[in-house]
Image: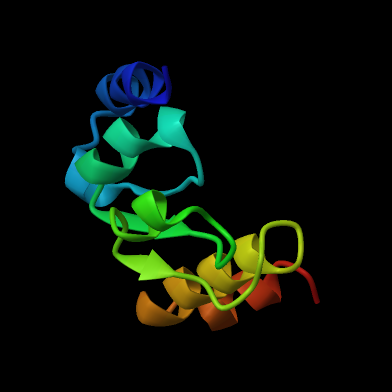
Length: 88
């Protein structure tokens, strides 16, 4: 299950769940989404997932939802300019 894998990764990297953002859209994501600091789901996710997360994207899965989350996280952490510099 994704929660157990994330728990192991957090232990390896010495991170708390509050430092983690995750995105999911199905049953096997619920425990992980409830545990992390910021949780996201695509706009076309089932209602029971949308009620679980902090943010529902305006885009559907496969149509920019992940990019929307990445840009939101970069901007909220004032890291967009640094990130863009990696590509220019």
